[in-house]
Length: 393
Image (cartoon, rainbow, N blue to C red; front, side, top):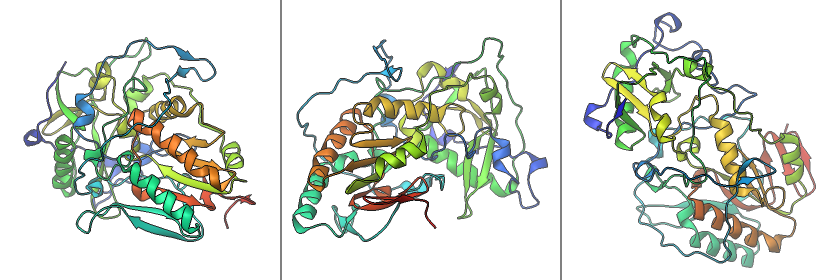
């Protein structure tokens, strides 16, 4: 097997709907039946977005680390003090290239009034949402804090350095009896040919995938139509998922997480930018994600959507990052994060500790899905506030 550098001019179209499973318009009848683990309601879910070449070049081979006994995950060493980093020059937001798949079970909906504060320029806005009922002093201090940590937000895919590999990489072990499967190239409905080719070019250009030669595993690509008329590129990982043992790392219990958030006077809701794609594939397992197209064969350099244990890997990374904050100042559900404070005066300190942690380990937030300094919101299908927890109507 040989993985070659990314090459946009060798970009391919992601092939191939199952002809027997598409309508006369070329639309897949039920994409969740095509790809094992695509947004089932009782499994891990997340976004499929893109990342940058800078996430790829920093791959390192990990050394063994000590175990964090209670959770069975790596312990991170936390240093006191404030780390000052320059705020980079940020290019235009390109997030529209690959819109995320967001489960309605995991969306944050903020109640009450919020205002938008622009930390950028007229040509390059950098907007964040904050609670509008804040006092003048609270508002000024929160804006000052956010301005000091603009580098923890990804305004485009070029702003994502990728999670520190010492925290997490995605591995793909296979069962002892499993044999590699090479799917034969399937035909793609002509309606999607040019759109899928364009998506492949974009993925190559940001270092999301790479050309691979002589892979042992090969899967076909399934284009899934989006609301805007374009297609989302998914890979039929069913064979690989069947050959992979299940990672039993648990998701938090929603009821406990919601109960632990209600009763706090100040809340901040945050979401990781491009979720899974901030996690690098382990170098030795990249080739297993190989997929075949009319224009060549490629593999993922980042953790793709649709793998059996991708959600468990992300939750393990989140637990590793925040194990000493969880159930105190922070709650985490995969890439959704909440900072909470019983006293309003304590909230900025809790936020700063959170920002320092994600800055240190290179986790980036999605500014469009963050709201800071509010008193209530809807979390995992429940309304939470200082005096309330219940199902929304």
